[in-house]
Length: 417
Image 1 (cartoon, rainbow, N blue to C red):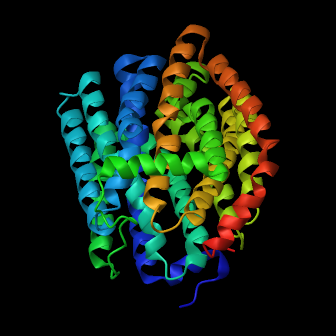
Image 2 (cartoon, one colour):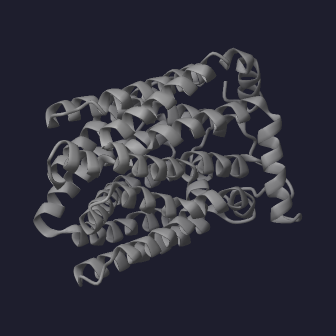
């Protein structure tokens, strides 16, 4: 079967296996995430606790991600991802057991979140890097990244909605248990893949990982497009990504709803995100991805400001859609550019820095916005964060012309154009 252009990455058997497995696994993951947020807010009734939970979960990513890129370049990416996913599965089952037996506490949630964060520091760059080896042609990498995001956001639409109703009917533990079983699909797909062992870094693993880590950081500093996009996505993530973390507070404290309200708000985010994912998947070239990245970072800040003004559930759902659209479009564009501009020898280290920017830094924003929400209210906290994101994104949008030539040259060098 030959897939159409918008789905061309699925013509590769390995990617097709991974995509099918992730369809199940990501749905379980989003049920898990919405359940964790609701559990924390139920245990503490605090915006700050939501921000703290996100912060401590991602602190290991912030500390370990730069080093993780140099380490995974020395390993078989497929086997590494298998063991890391198995570890995540164990944590999901442990959280399910503790919640079901009512032994759970905020402190235990934090401990398990830190443990999961340590695995994610290595799992995320491994998964990002492995996608490039799952497709048969480098021309399909951009499509694979966009399809991954389409899948991620379809799951984001289904998972939280189902999760909200499941929490209401059976409690958070059932979401955690479902997520644990969903990991089995990815583990099975990884075992079934037939691929050559992905190449390790340019050093062949002979130099020290710390030296390679420092080389990766210097590489990102020297090459202007890396520096530009990493800075832009870091600022955007710091100020706007906390919107998702504060959704439970928005649903309960501002819109006076319950777990079903939270599921509906996240469904609104996911509908917009799915639209953005499909838009990027349908594009045939990465030449204009820098345009999309800068404009949607600006739109992200503006949409967060509008969403913060919601005072009814219906308007909340409608205004959540642009948040999802801009969030996903800017991250797909940035992710794709970072992967396609990088050589095989440096991709893992560059994607580890991207992981730091997109996952490790935003929790600092969550911590700040959570504390700010306790002081001035959830709505005002989101509005203020949206203002800062809009101003900084506009500043960087005006500077894109200075690096456009280098972006196109790098894409041509790596055969992405």
